[in-house]
Length: 114
Image (cartoon, rainbow, N blue to C red; front, side, top):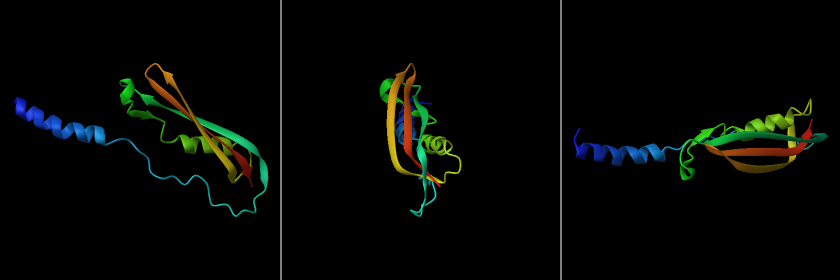
């Protein structure tokens, strides 16, 4: 392969490689509530994921990042047996450095209802 062919491949393939980022679609987490539900108790769920494996400015490999909201929600709802959803929801996100990336934790706090 000549230099010109390699250059053309790099010009075409690199933008495609870096432009095709990981993403997740919309996720319906809980059913629509009627407003007549009874509050059971306050619950909190947490889930973490990691971005990493490259240089600091280029953490492009997500490990469990896209499913954090869903996992945190189900962690919270499972603390109240019989709960069908959450109201008065607060979402917090924290992150910290690990050796090969950043750990991103999300917590969902809310009133479990039935």
